[in-house]
Length: 314
Image (spheres, rainbow, N blue to C red):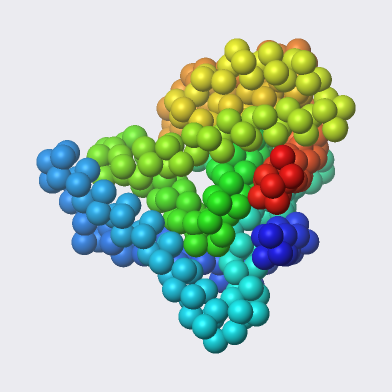
């Protein structure tokens, strides 16, 4: 509990300074290195899937084993070294402050009326065609980014850290990184990234549903419309191509009284996604500010709940 608490507080205070080399980048380099030897688009689909399974086992296995071995070695030298290193490892897994910092850049640009910078900033967070995005499109994309990442970037890693410390937290982070790099349904990764995407869905199944619950509880503390949030969550929790993403997004949409999803442009092609929530009012900058507050409150709710369970108080 001490290591988890220290790591969590460090994230809230420090975030991810750009001058620090983040371990996720090492995982990313490993994924690209293995891709050079494994991925061959001329292979049959089943062969590509098998190679993708090898990729998943290798990357996720190393993501768990490396921190496990390091912590074990440090514990043999001195338990205090183990505690300090695990606190740092846990700190680097959490992404609450980082998520706020990146979306705050979008908020500031829009508040200053700088659409060019706002489109550039949101382009770092989503894969949509930002050059055609209106102010409302940008705000909606930022809100969706926060809501979705509340699940797989905040509560899910927290869930696994409380179960198995830094090694299990990094195991999840490895799988989640794989999904973000190869888990696409396109010509290149549809088969090769199949197992990475599916396993990420499995690992996020429980955390996504807990995230939605924590968002509703956070909405209560922020005096948002909890009844509407619960109603929209119950109705729209499956309105997404992902089996998990709609849970936090629909809960947030209901609390804010806005509609997420809908029309978006990807690589010059307009896509109509299912919607979450009802357009009780136009989306504006205040909604993004409320979502950023919701990010921190949901994170705190999750941490408190998991802590109480870990300490055997509930």
